[in-house]
Image (cartoon, rainbow, N blue to C red; front, side):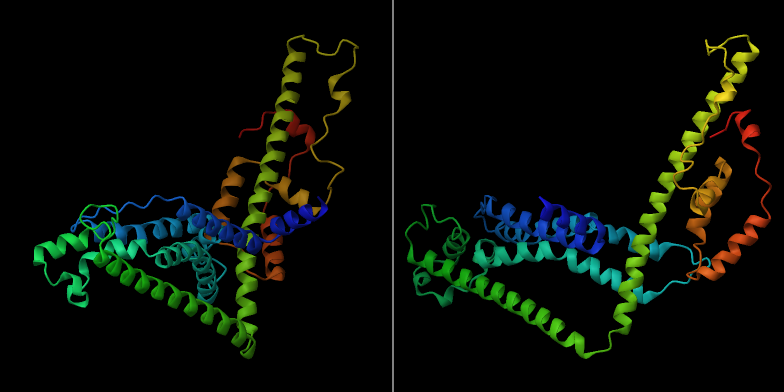
Length: 344
């Protein structure tokens, strides 16, 4: 149980590990999906090619789109590409690195499907049985051209009466299956050699640019996550304060109408309404969150985050923050805030 918890925490803390896990899961689903698929070639000259190539290419396209949708970095990449420049310049190298990473993970499941289909051979036999040259097989010498085309279209259907137990059907099917498997193993070998060379030759080159692009691509992803989490924290705190202010203002209205809520005779204000989260954090982080205390300020903050993200320089960001706070109107006292409704 402890090992499982450690593995789960590792995947939870690393976005790259999560994406790799999703990639492996899609590949496993692809294998299961192909093994359970019922292949039925129409055995008609006009539709064999369409069915065979469609089955070879359409599921990989759907799996590729699923891989893009499941990868959070694809959305982050598009947002980084389309965002206004503002006070932070765009780095095309980071976008290329993110695009390469997204495409590599999204192409894993489609490649698994294509390789399985080629090694199995059924798709290629169905798609190209009508395109085989009859002169390569001696069994078609006594057939007319129309009979040859009809026979070749029936090759994928071994139970059909026209081609059942026919040596010519077995020869054509074996020829196309061998060709399909040769293509599949060639692609597999090419991918393995490419991955091997990329892994072995990468340390031979300067790693500075790669490390920089990996760092900043991870930074963009983590920054957006932290911003979303901080917005959720601020929304919860803001909603909590709005509810407390509402109840406090209702106490004043009830006292004005002569209604008493406390049967012990104590003044409700003497109890004091604690602000949410006081004493737990108490640092500048909570102060910065509570400084945004109206709908107009929240809307301004969100629009500024989208249109002009802060520069990647903490010293300049601190100066900008100080200059912005110096022009802000003084914050009202807690007693003044409690005496009125907060508009959301």
